[in-house]
Length: 134
Image 1 (cartoon, rainbow, N blue to C red):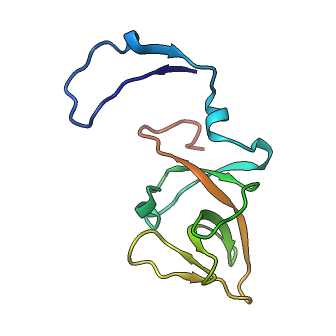
Image 2 (image 1 turned 90 degrees about the vertical axis):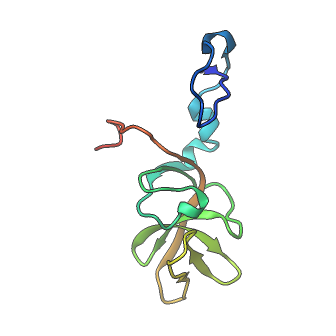
């Protein structure tokens, strides 16, 4: 992967040619983003409930099923037949949104529930991708 080291701020008005700081790194995006390929899948976020942790509508989620779930991890779960992305509160047995105005989802014994994996990365696309529009 070719990487251009370019420090920039949101208010930048101009900068020198980035070619001067051009470096070749032995790295691929797959290696950077996916630690356990056979246990990893990709999902797409919907809604605004996780904006408080930087996950916005349309973001790409990298979900790892191999990672051990810890308290307050961001997870994808099947909750009562619906896939949800939430913060897991293991002590209180509930799923919590990262945005105010969303009630917690209690993990009760009579509600079908399974953890599908831990969200280990999220990616925001600033332009539409033909690969994601299917």
